[in-house]
Length: 227
Image (cartoon, rainbow, N blue to C red; front, side, top):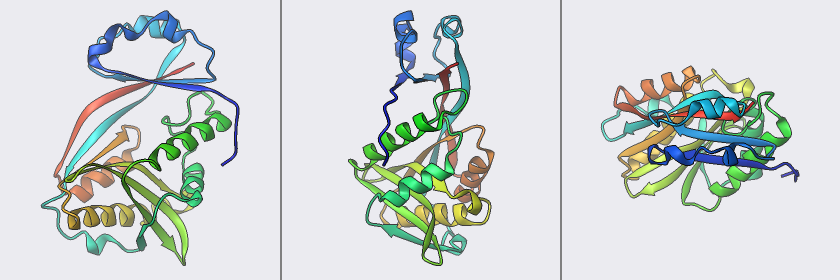
């Protein structure tokens, strides 16, 4: 991965931390800042606006009960495999797939250099935890990846899902997620979580369809960046 010099800051603000938003926090010299605020948190949004912070996304956590979902195997129509770990190919697919994803792009103009830094650091963190990595292939070439991290013996969370732009809406996503659901079922996992942007209607619909209605949406978060 290429090395860059820009600096960024992530801050998660929970309901109990409503007084954490201060001028000292908001006035900084970072090239990019991302605040993730619980939607039910009564923070001082006037202070956010005065310091040029804008709300760019709302995400919601999907909680899927895997145990009773049937018929997943027939939905895997492409070549999907369990991979031994996170490779450089995983990063490259994610880099090409994510052009405006607000997990990584922390400026209004979606600064690509800064986005690559954030994405690279995010993937490095995933290398250090117990996980499952899935790859979708066409003629032995990878076109999509999924990463799910282990929370407990019966719980996993999908933390990265990326499909090359030219393969989106062509069955790669359906195949990857159906394979992931089925593989986790076989391993005795009962609950799968995933945090999804409410702007990503296709991902929301895919999760609803695959889960056969056995899905709950919880813990909405508002995402702010420095404008």
